[in-house]
Image (cartoon, rainbow, N blue to C red; front, top):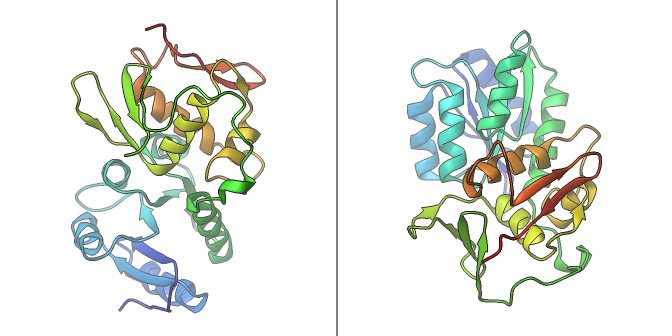
Length: 248
């Protein structure tokens, strides 16, 4: 049964190990989280249809639809945190998990205290930071209300939507929108990873945090003509990233 507390952060555990599910419901519930645990992808979809959680703790190796496919589905349809649970000897799976949309990973067997710390870190990244604490744009590139060209797409600032050339909606998470907006407001300027973390929801970053790199990789797949040879969001070796508007 789900464990709940008022206004608690919601965690959905997806794991086919009954013992792991029971342990996490009890442990995370005792630390103030509202926890629901399910055994497979079908049950996960049913749980999310009832209520979208804040974080999904997703085992990689599940019966039927595996964790990678489920992570891809979650990232395309929901703005939530995804924490992948992998085997200790599966480094490739971890990399692929991050590439398809996971925010972080933890390997089995894990210390529940480390898991809780990683959940807290993912939740911090999802929290909007107060507007007053973000550095002001150095150079405005678009007036409010304008649909802005970005790579091969258009970003509609009021609706926070991204559209391709045919007018089709391109799924965009809140974090990805924040990143695009930060770049658009600061064209042709090198932005360090630290600054990008401060400008977006990742206000509390940690050493070796790859969240910005992962999200930029995803953005490039959406807006670049050739993601392997990016022209809109360029890497500046040793310094960060720079947004270069295309001539129109």
